[in-house]
Image (tube, rainbow, N blue to C red; front, side):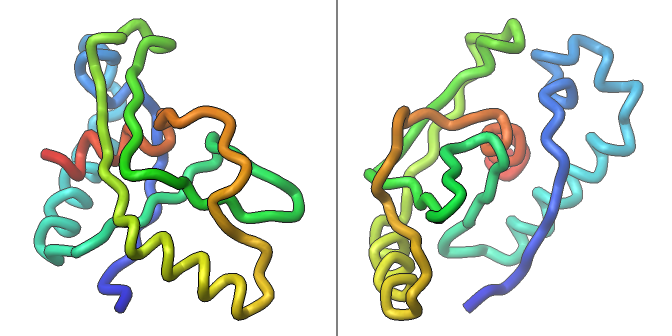
Length: 130
């Protein structure tokens, strides 16, 4: 059952270790992220599903991340010490793939080139994890 849905931007600048004070210029975005994180925590979800425009994409197939977990860092934003790790709900992934197949939707876990989280996933996870 879906208990909530949230759509957020993902500028790495809003993370203090990356923004180094510059995030204060977009404080409304930072505040909104904190509020979204509180709302998600209040829902106590069993699983959080993230969609990111920077991950593996195909014109004719919806990629679902395989495996048990992934990690990433903000090295490309001069903050390589900032690391995020996410554990995957493998039962959810398996069921989602079965439902997609049964519905004729081309989707699954094939085709992953690199098991790393991108900033489109890590920025929201930074705030959800708080």
